[in-house]
Length: 305
Ligand code: SF4
Image (cartoon, rainbow, N blue to C red; front, top):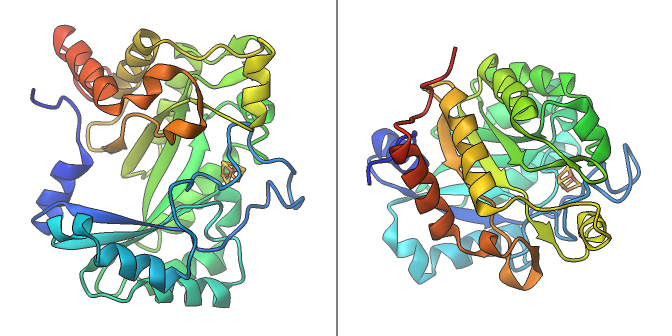
């Protein structure tokens, strides 16, 4: 079935002539929302490993070299070095420079991609990222989740939405591409969840900024998180697959047509997934979304003003 939105794989083929393999790296960072700098306990959905649960801890160079030596890597002609766990700009500039350099051990790494929080991007850190633009692209993945400050407070995000726009401007002015992470189905109170109104606001914010990519995550409940406690006490009800597909389509139709969708569903290791069970079947989620868009004659940007 032909995709009705811009996929990352098509974009990579267009830019680099082939898909790129993603090397997921635990760079040894922590998060200011966990160590007490701006909060403790982290965002309510965040697991103990800060989203890189599948990564085997090792030195940065070893993580990269072991991926490159694996059978999975042989399918690709080039790679993305993706610093995934926690907040990957939350260190002194010299430390950041060293850790990013340690990953770039192979000329086939075409992209340095760094996941972080908008309140951990300042001029100095944006300058360090820009140093790595020589001969490769640099992407910064910013966790927005929602444009609603009410939701942000409830999920303990730890920064105001205005910080997102500031970080995008700092990065884009240096040639660094920004990929925004958003989550569908977030709670904004006990037994209260975001719906179309909040999602429209989040998409409107993204459309108003020079963001080049979006990752759409379905909110899943990971075991041993505060969201899991809320779920188990009856304070949060996960979306059904049908609700998720409808809301994801709602967002895609309103998203600017030039933005690339890097992902359209969340990915939780099965052993850690408490709910919803449908989240474990990524292919089914994506095909349900594709079928819904097709059946309703919808495509990315068709309702973007
Ligand atoms: S900002 Fe990211 S790493 Fe930090 S607590 Fe929130 S989700 Fe976890």
